[in-house]
Image (cartoon, rainbow, N blue to C red; front, side):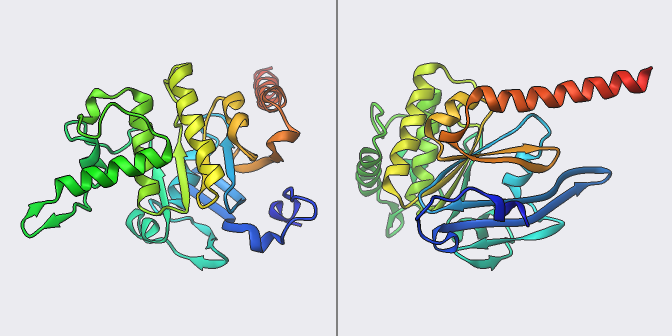
Length: 271
């Protein structure tokens, strides 16, 4: 029985295949002598928020890069809406509805909010940019998503970290992403800004048309918004639980126990 067969499922709900928007089966990836992923199986249901957690070096970033088309796995396969796909690039993945928001956000600080929203997809009238139309559409989209900023005319550089993160997420949703990957969206943020992003993720969950995978280190924050959590250890999924069935303390203890084992093995080897 595979890890996916053992994954939790809502009693009395629709079949697993009907729920799933994304599935990764038996994904492995090596970099020379280093094994980043061994045999990873994950699933993401429609409208679900999945927390992908684990210590540094556990393989989270590698898995993210494979799902968004940045890297190819050495083995295994990806299924999108039940159909096997081979992602050739990030652009290809985006065309299929898989988008990623990295920590660096890929925003151009000198440009206005609305120009960033339409980056590489600018609306034109003849040879001229349709600034008024882009401004209006960006303002309406951000308002619908509950993203509050002073104005869509201000340069992105003038916004707070939380506001910039919100703009990057809103832009991905604006391009019709159905699977959204968030790489450490709460990193280096204060409580207020972190709460803003968590609220935005909650709103996405309530929309029901976007499924989200969040990579994060702060277990308590993840459990606030995630339906389910996957813990990566040593390149494999060690835990797949509904958020309501676990706690930050339990997840932390699992990771700490690994440290204890590693220390014990090191001391035993040195003896």
